[in-house]
Length: 253
Length: 253
Image (cartoon, rainbow over all chains, first blue to last red; front, side, top):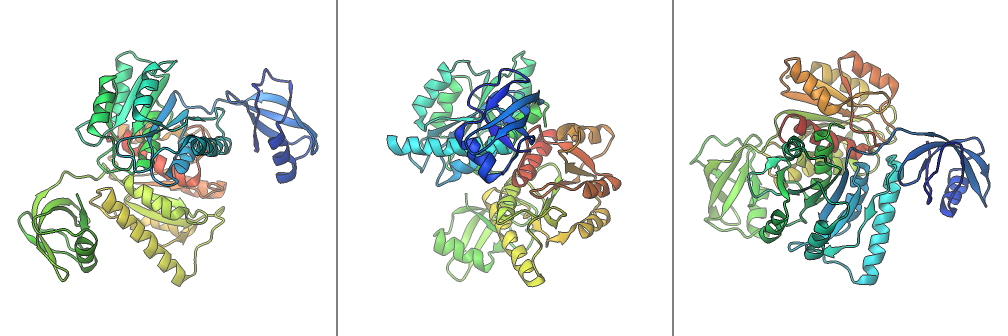
């Protein structure tokens, strides 16, 4: 079923909603949908079934028929991704969105070969990656559209991590250089300690990994080192893997 | 540490091994390694530490110093992948190798848009994908080099699955169209029933998914339907996710 993204939250079943302009073009010119067709609507919070009413090139409206079961995973997972080379961030945004990521925070780390762009290019990049996340959210039937933050340096990220509101219930670091706990066991330990994991962060280093200094700073604010198995994962694979492990540990997969 | 692939199994610690020709060129011309440098050797079964002895453009030898802890996951996982579009199979081979896949069986399924190539092109494709798996195995520090099978049709795959020796201890199907068990719970159920999962298969449909008819045939030979969460995963993401879930369920991640 085709999915459309609305800019305003849907207030209830039975109401009529108006499609935003770019979705009108997509529904009519690309998909050639008609009055009576069933579609899914995403309002950034929930997923609904709806039936098209008015369909023409100026306007598309739909009547909201029912709330769909939430396709969202059991926690908000923020992926803090060491800035990777080339266009890997696009692939990470797409696949991590499919795998239930809540927000993406790209970070220029000590061993990042790629550097953060100058302000004007940085904003364009952020917009491009955000669009990729939006498209992936639609395709994978997410109700939440993951936010993509602008790339910052490590110190700014650390500050944002500490001051985040709502606060993070746990921060995990994929860290290959010590005998860390398997990630699922670290998650289980948090649960055993009575924590409810509403909002967690996973820190993934760039190609060269997280530096010792960065690791120490993360550890100092209470981050937990975890392993994702005995093989060396590429930076663009590690975050995807961590999300799958997280949802498995929380019983969804 | 740089890793090299040997064609013959290493018979023990302290022996001297000779590098195959293409590894000689890589070690000398590309990496400019020297006598005394430490390297890792992969013989397709184990991973070893070794020290270079003779290093010149004609010959490279190394003395095997120690056996490294096995980087292999706790079971052999065969990824049975519905033939995807374009070059997605390359990406799947690379990332699934990092994530511990044992073998890759590409299968032309009912809903595959891509079709299996004619014999001569099929062999070339198999060789190309095998090389990608080999490179990924080296990069991710695998000891086992995943085999890539030639693309076959569904009937042939089903036959191979049934007649496999050693036999499969479990076959899982990622199947979105029914209320399937989360994959980790299905794995746990197998363990609770007293099965040891030495060798398992995971079946992933192509872009359009597995057809009802294919699902029934798999079910008839005892395959277990599982879910990988409530979001719709692309075909190239589903297999990677299934591997991460499998290793989590088996305690490695």
